[in-house]
Image (cartoon, rainbow, N blue to C red; front, side, top):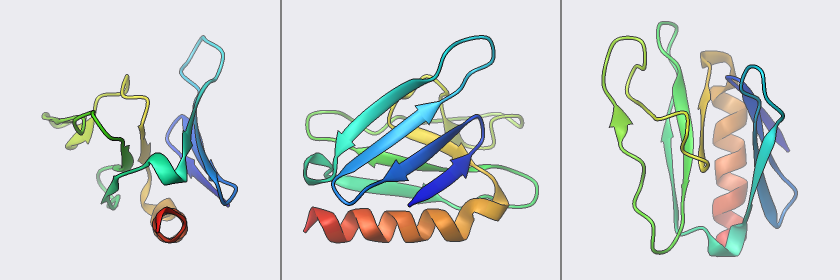
Length: 106
């Protein structure tokens, strides 16, 4: 299962969540999270005007705060390794991925 985001992807194979960000000018830097280690998820659907995001929460770490401003649209910083911005057309795929991760957590 895979969700194409803004400058990256999130994939889930039933046990591991892999977030691969592809910033301009550098190599992809994947972050792998085991579904059993995830304590929660945050999802803000993208609209036609602003991107949304998917964020995974881990024990002992606080959720990345949403950055304000018109160009960021209330998303976590791009440097947060456990979140990825998504466009409006990826909302349905993101909801399915989050549901699968939540089911694997329990």
